[in-house]
Image 1: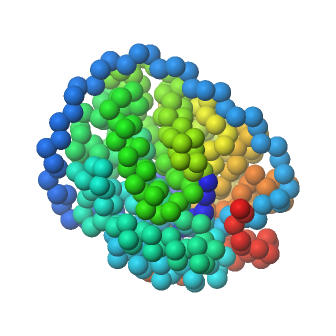
Image 2 (image 1 turned 30 degrees about the vertical axis):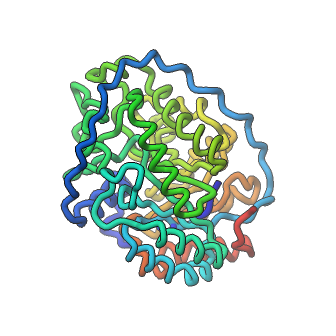
Length: 391
């Protein structure tokens, strides 16, 4: 299920310690025009669900293999209009020349949804533009992987995204004693039965438009589960709740649509045990979900600080997952994580390659010349001697 996309030292501290996903998403959101007035969509009140069943047991571990697959050399970035799609299509040949063979494109709610038109916002991506981008990607040997952030990242500091703006009752209520550093990042309630049918429709439309064989569901930086103010979730185990959402997404994506599923791995890590920050690992008890989700999900393991080792990668490998290490900036930190990951791959190809996340710092028209992309892809291309994605 996959193929994907990813500037300066002053931003380094902010992104490594304060979570660049949230800030970059917010910056992009604040630049867009005021949202259109939502349609008058009525929803019946959500019934009290039965206690959630335990998440299914994970698939058997994937045995370590040595370089049986060519490395996935990816870039991740936002594309949120037809203009951005056209710019990315123009950049793809140059990206491919640098070694990129996979691009993750995060559309957010900037898509011409037909099933739920009340959820499209600002400029949108049309099906025609998406299919043209997919064709250009195929011609250049690049795997295109669309992304829609699920569960978390439904708000920014000064902005509410379309799902919770249109249906505010879908939000997990704030706890009585929130962490003020992260409280602005709202997520939906994992036990509200009204949400999944809508989200599945959105995923179907985006995946079909991009002719995708893979889909990225996000799920990073979730900070509010089992709120004491949520009648459906209070008192529930947070790891089980998080795994429940991942498994409910995996069913239709991998089971019905036969797409490879990708997700960010930070909520599957224990910050205390790994030494990571509360942004790129969990301090709220979700880490146990690592044993409750399918190991067929590809884990995008993002870390933006410079370290001598990254214990999450061996952990995910031990648990049986394929791991796609992901860096951002500064360049020194990206280089450190890339070098570490490339060394691990020499003995285990379940380290599938490397992903340069660009967020809004990597504009489609300039991402091919972004220093992390240029340097990291060059190093991997030289080491692997091949940039063709595996079948």
